[in-house]
Image (cartoon, rainbow, N blue to C red; front, side, top):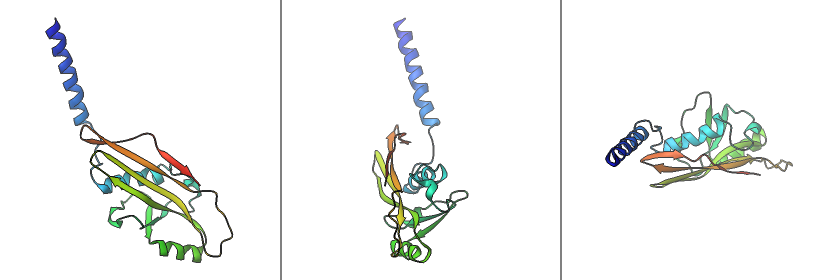
Amino acid sequence: MKKKLILISLVIILILVSSLILFRPKGLNSKQDFVKRVLQIAVVSGEIPDYDLIKDNRNIILSSENLDTKLIPMLDGIKFAILSPAEIKEKANKEGDFLYLKFNKIDIGGKNASISLDNTWSVSDTSKVGYLSGGGFTITFHKFMGSWVEDKLRQSWIS
C-alpha cells in the first residue's frame, strides 16, 4: 500500500512538472521580448500611470535614452516615434508640452529581471504650466523552472 502511494505521488509530480514545461508561456527569452512585454502593459493595456493623458495614444513618443532602439517592437495599432532627449525638447518647444515614455532601467540577470518605464512630461522653454501628472512603473520577472514569469505586483509611482 505504501509503495502504491509513493508511486502515485511520483506520477502526479511527473505530470505536474511536465505540464509546466510543455505549457509554459513562450516569448520571454530576449531583451527585446522583455521590452515588448513592458510596452504592451504600458500602452496596449494602458496600465502606465496617466496613460489617458497621452495626447495620441496610437502615436507614442519614446525616448532613445537608456535604450537600444533595435529593441523596440511592432505593436498592432501603435506607432513609436523614437526621439533623442534633445529632439523631445525641440518638439516640445515647437508644438507644446506633451507626455512621452522613457525607459529608466532595463536590468536582466540570470534569475531576475526588472524594467522601469516612465510616462513623463516634456515641457517647452516658454511653458508656464507645472504638471502634477505622469508617473511610471517597474515590472519584475523571475525565472521559474527555466521560464520567465511576470510578477503580478507592480511598483508604480505618480508625479
